[in-house]
Image (cartoon, helix red, strand yellow):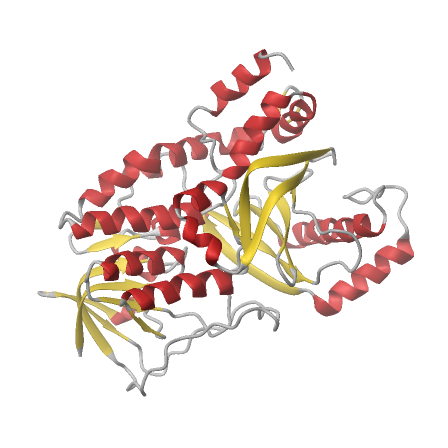
Length: 431
């Protein structure tokens, strides 16, 4: 039985980055990757400009940088954003593999083992993790397209069923449904969850494939089209409370049809209009029916009061990324917070004050996430007789200052704490 200083459950961005930072400083780290081989996380894969500036090495992962974005209001008004700071879109297989490989190169030991709550035991000397004998990682909603980079785990000798590992610090980085978080911080109610679902589909054969964000007509949330190197990730993000599968799935299909429709006819509408070429739409629909691969996931979307009461570390344990609830309640974006929380935890651990991690994340990004929780209903609510997202895009179409603030928000450079002031100041400046 091997003993480690840190046992990190979950090899997504948060777990792998924490493992790398600790291992580089000589900490003996075990990193547990419990996902099926070749199974990506259900995620759009966007990494903000703020994250790329903080950690430039992320650009070494195989992906696509984006400096232009098309944004649509609920009624279909289009806003073209030329971004001053580009963001990146990755296949999560490629992105997560890149970060996990860096952790391994730094000296972390990576185990292809799923650790559940029943396999975690606290002891006098720390923690014991046990791989449940005969347990298999559950299959996901859909496989990744075959042409994507396959996941590679280190070659290791045969491991006995029910293998065990011991360690001093237990780190939960195992996502929204974290078994570590449920055991140590308590479960989150459905009202504090968001839903993301979508399809991986082929790239269009004609015209360019733009990156698109479209706010939903009549619903909380937005749809996206994120072209990757060999396919497009289409999806919708909404709250658990607003989620209704059939109408939202139909809305997503309308969005996908509109996206391909515009590639063939630049004058076509994104959402279905009265002038629809039904034969063309049926041809596109039939093609998607045979090629699109579905995925779905939950995202944390904490209420503002929960940020004051929920703790993400304690004596001998810590939570990172989605497992801690660190995701933007307005957009669902979580990769920046996954990486930043890993960094803050590693810094605290390395100076032997791991409990300081709680105060550090609150000072660093806690206020902004709480503010986003407070703004969520207003962001998707009404403003001057129309959805705020409708007015926001209308104003940005006619005002360069507001358009610039919106671009900074997309890039991750504009927080929510002073968003209202920035918008007001921009609106008062001459166009």
